[in-house]
Image (cartoon, rainbow, N blue to C red; front, side, top):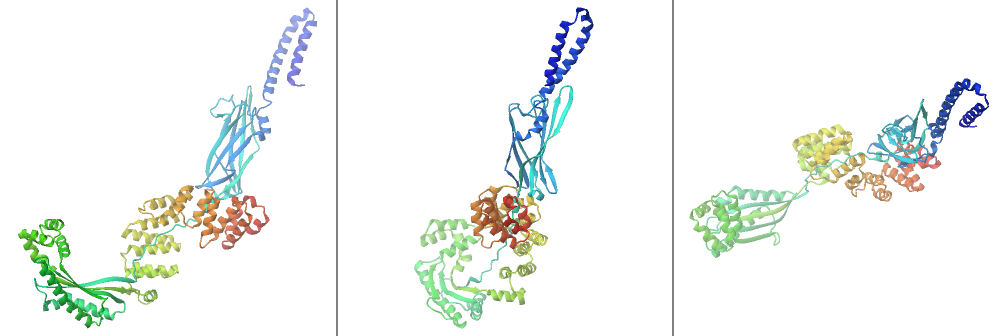
Length: 607
């Protein structure tokens, strides 16, 4: 029988007994009855308290499984170096006691330790505090918190630890520890698979194996004359031109393409006279040119050699005026722009007497000329010759030849040797120092690369050097400094965008990473797709990589696990661990493969 019922019967019995007792005993029994009533009132209160606590803290503890929890995502994931837990809890009707307070602490447990998240405190309707109130008729809570990711969390679980406290009137508070509740497995750490190998930029050489040149020399004439003076034949200009032809004839690396004569008259005097004058000058200058070509044993053919008489040299006149410091230069140029008729032009200029006099002294004599021209190409060293010269006598090579020669070697150490020679022979060459750093990055000599890039920056601080210093900062683990360098590049290259893509993955900004990587056929491009749950796109990129590496196959194995394609998973995981044995340990703790941890084939691959 319930305690409350027993006490009611007891009180009823007392009342019945009082009616039977003689009145004489009434006074005597009065005190006794009052004491018994007080005792039973206390018992009654305690009974009420006991009844009210039948669904209290202990009951909540015993029935904790009635609470429903939902974790998003179902398996915890690491993003941007953090693990986020989103928990929704739902309490059934009449579960949460009005006088109870619960402290909920999610904890990530792993083999070597644990990581507590922040505690959430909930309270019943009668609790006088400032925590979230859970209604007696059924209610829910939403929880969110993040903790720093630790590699040991790869194989772990998320559990909820609950401590309860119930306030009781006239009695001390009751406390209870609930059984830990496992909420989720974790942690998927695919974001940490980013290949942190930034791309440096190589400063390009300007080497051209065949270089086009033009060699010219003038023969000047006296006004209104066409005969070539002896003084002109003996001038340094004409003698130097003949010497060039002699040397070109002997040099196997010089090929003459075209040669010819352009003869002019100065734009003063009658037009007909000047046209005839330029024709006669063409003939006399042609004699000089032909003699020089013959002395150098060059054969003159019809398509190779051309002579032209061009009359009054107004173009030459305009160029010389523009380059002069004549006081009325702008006025002369205005006349030339206003009038196209050569006679009107001459008349207008002659009207400016002082100006024309200055022109007659400084400009016009230079226009009474014939120009001897040779167009030729200079053929540089072949690849074999460049490598032979570098090995035997590197001092004979100019800067562009050295920078180009380095690209002829596949061996990075040989490339480094050539670039270091270029930097030593041409210490003011920013490109040479930059390229030393470029190879040092490839050789994973980070500090040596940094010194070389800083030397290049001291010569010229440009986009290439900023990108490369950012690459060094990224390799040193200085993410913010690296990003600052990359973002300072005025005209980002594909390398700079790729490097920003790496940083975006590290920071958990996967949409940005996709944009930066673009269509690059790289492992990191596929990884960005995976992190945005675009499995098909990731697989397409992985299949397009020309030289698949171990991580290429590892990511394919992840795609297989996500799409329940066990053949893809096992075949690619097997190849990945064969190429790089370290991936066995990674795979054993990679929750992407969590559903296969007990699979015999999986175990045989990773053991």
